[in-house]
Length: 320
Image 1 (cartoon, rainbow, N blue to C red):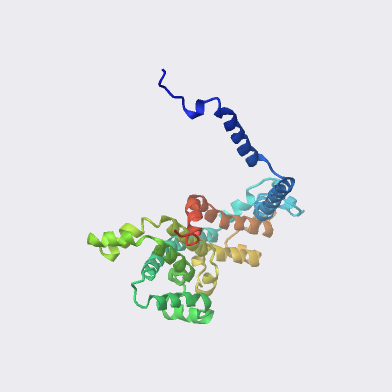
Image 2 (image 1 turned 120 degrees about the vertical axis):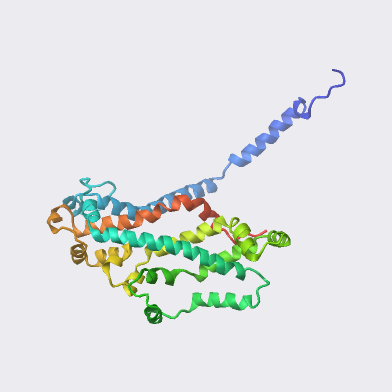
């Protein structure tokens, strides 16, 4: 048609210029100087070596625990099992103490994580509000506990006077609140728009309604991050068992692991490991297998919380 106008992209005059512009863009993106290439090669090499250094100790322990006791005694680097066998794991899982330690650690970790995350949110939310009277003083008192604490003996006396010695409460209650976790969650709550609460208050919502129905649903990332911190702390805690628990049946898994690492022969005897199987394992393979058994469960939690954890660690770093 006489009145039709071709788009600017279809004009032949613009074609050479477009090609030239695209060529310039692509050359800028793909062209690298020799210094940049050397820098990238160095980065890749450095991080490959760093990954190897960080992952090999765990891999070594795993391969060692799966190796035949006589071949493993030769020592050296372990990239694959030497004489692949599950004998050591059969012996370890045959120990009643290992199973009781698993039950105690799982119970303490689950209960401590649920209660600790809930109490951390309840503590952090009012501290994030400017309308809280003496809020700066209360926040300072929380921060003060990061610098100073009563110490081991006063903590033991407190647990004893509360009648919690040799009970699950002694493993759960002391670690419920962490000043660091409170401050992290408080920073996140303070970054939420105040208009959300104001609109809810206009509709007649109370503070508890705002907290449970608005704030908590918007705080999935920070809650998952804090829950992960608390869960790892509870799972790896053995010192509370050493201080407060006397009955071996109430020992956490990490305390049993520590006992195996420091006094393997006596620990295996107390754990009910049959000494007639000594030809199929050694104290070193028992230690390696126990380390793997104690480490793998908490490692399995990370993939499910990874996306929340990545978001959570960035909280408070960028605002606006």
